[in-house]
Amino acid sequence: MSSDRTPLIAGNWKMHKSIAEAEEFIAALLPRVSDAEGVEVGICPPFLALQAMVHSTRGSRVQVFAQTMHQADHGAFTGEVAASMLTEIDVHGVILGHSERRELFGETDRALALKVPAALAAGLTPILCVGETEDERERGDTQRKLRHQVQEDLARLPDDRLGDVVIAYEPIWAIGTGQVATPEQAQEAIAFVRALVADRSREQAGRVRVLYGGSVKPDNAAELLALPDVDGALVGGASLDAASFAAIVAAAR
View 1 (cartoon, rainbow, N blue to C red):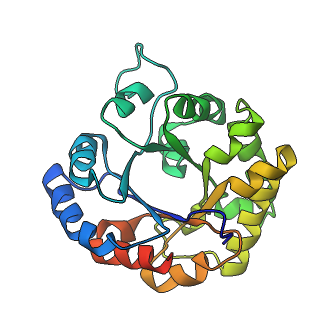
View 2 (view 1 turned 135 degrees about the vertical axis):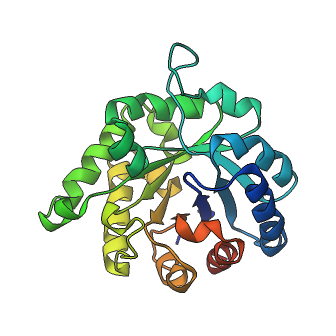
């Protein structure tokens, strides 16, 4: 990892934890990460727990991210949440384009091209997720898929804002499957993502943080985080337990 870029370890809780469970988790996490100098730590709770987590993390080094948002400021979008609603409660950022949002809920690259600039305009840090399926990897289409997603999803962003986006490379075949990309596979894909940003701005490619996501656990985190282009991790299942999540944060130090 470049010493210029501060690593980010973000835990995506998905549809887990009531407010009471979230409070129990954060009480256990905060003392464990209080001395994690030089690492940014984020949790991504469900919408209903966001406000409680913002309140409970205030003054700590833990940032709070939402799991998705709509691109419009307001409107007839039943079930959706706007960026301004997130910033009103001091949420720090938002995951966009997670493979589960794309696959299960029809989130498109066209929508993401609007969501990324909308998040930045509102002052939110977007974590844009990209990655290939098992079929695509076996067909040799990994780079084609990543090129399409990165180019389309960042198309409406001015070059000088590219470095403000966090990109999470998540090989879909490794999410929740227990399979992990080999260090070689992870480094190759993440270096390729950085090269795609460099096609537009070499300077911003040096700034942009690219995370690895896909069955990151305490026992594989150090090896993945030591890779030259990996700037942190988007953690799924292992982020639901305070001790295991803190161990991944410690591996990033």
